[in-house]
Length: 432
Image (tube, rainbow, N blue to C red):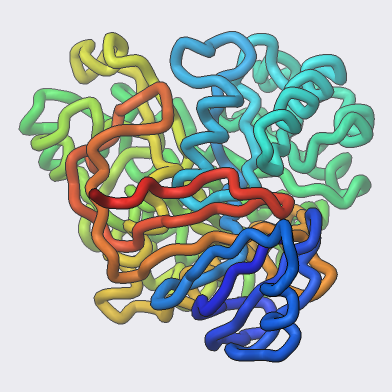
């Protein structure tokens, strides 16, 4: 038995907050009690009871990330399922959904079953997508129903946009019939000369053409129309422009099942970061302008953007040391997402901690129908214990990769304990 005692519990599903003792028996939450309860006092007299004293700390549902790249199979020198899960646990995540730009891709039953089986060994809830098209080539649909039956929880060709409108419409009809979401990388390559850097003053200063905002806006506009026509559920991934945020907002008001995710780096940084951090600030879609950053924050605040997702994208040091136009796009994000949310969203007053936790857990769980994001008796014992104001230094990573502009920074929101399926999967070392 495990008891998380004296912590300030936040549950976004019931909007409950306050000091509670949480009793865990096996993989299930067996009881939630007010501080000083007789029931917990009696349990503490028993043997084989592990106690986590969370006094002065926040206890929240284990975080949920619907957008991670664990590079497994095929590119495990960057990351693998085991190392990715360790980074997730350190960041307070207990549920993650892996993307399918692997080798082989997530376009066949065998690969999906393999990664899910290996994911079970990590102690976390490791889910996977299924690809929309074979080889992510955008020409032929995958056997979508078979892949869902094999255990995939959503469809995406993340890393590549689906540019063929006919294929996209066909995919939407099939996904709608299966009641599953298609998660979309919305960047039209026809607009882009050099990806990963916003087209603007910074790109001109660097002598690079870059990626204009219309690459995203045009595809978001197209796919909202397809969703209206087909009734499909769509997620716009890693949204980067104020115009796309506004289109999502209007689509939601219309009643369409359009969701959106934003990354911590898009609500924290602008394209000016490329001048300081080089390739570690290069990503697809790129960091854009301060007006876009503020629009993303407003979208998260008012619910137009449903989810904070990391787009955790590890690369090797050698790859990121290549010239700006040759290096791959993407940064790691699992270990810093909660901290950046506290620093950039809660501390300035854009949202409460309750809302932040909802965007980092419950919303994604509901969209993708995962048993996560809530704290209730009889529910899964997936929790994160953290200090909202406690500083920690991100000076080393549990990921295989360190391609992030936040390495070396002192951040708030130190994660002390991550509990998944009733077991402690991460525990911070005590400071000497």
